[in-house]
Length: 311
Image (cartoon, rainbow, N blue to C red; front, top):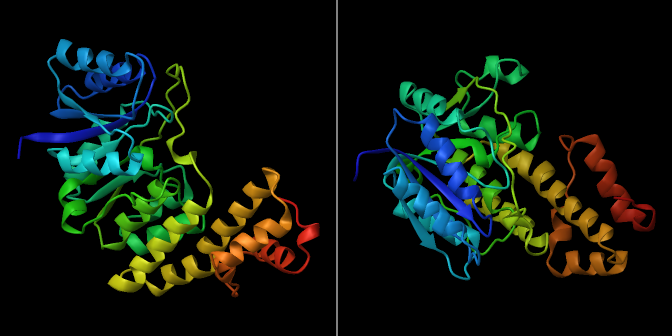
């Protein structure tokens, strides 16, 4: 394996000089690190990939472009992971940029703590000062309950940890794949570190919004979360609290989110009901004492008085 500290994986499509600009900014902020840039071309028809390659060549950086063809972004990201040589991996989306000064801070933290995953949890947040020994299941429960936030676009993960535990993106899911990846990464007892750096969104000009995750229907996100839940069952990973949080909070909330999207898109109530029943998603609308009150009311109203339900 080459002596690479961090592999930066960047999916890109028709964004002109944005990818080149991202590479330039990261390289300026990581001069003391050995970084490689893996650009995943999602069938671009402009000069964005040539621009990125020129940036790599001009500054004598380590990097390459992977042509993903007509495959899914999940497949391309998996290829990026397997093609990478970095000790750690991070993902950068042109449509959801953060200022790249977090990368050296993350690297310093994950190396210093000998951790598998690092993410941002500023001390100003309630959870920040209490996360010294948090495990993967606890963090995942916090994500389900929205008391902790972790953005897939701003994490750093040990590559060996991903490969050893066969953690990858679900290639048949066009939505929910990033969220599922994060949950799966937390299942296999990783050593977790957090940085108290406050992430700042980068206002770099994006010529065309890249929303890779919303290409198709919302049912794919339900499937992705179901796959995570099934992984918990098959591998016997994840605490009882996490399994309960998924069964009575995460899965029902994802189904109801799908209902809201379809209603806003103009689909009739009867068609949505029938689709949920056909795919057996209606069976996921379970309730328990741990179901949040707001979600409980949404489910009950949808079950018994759907005509009065409003997204």
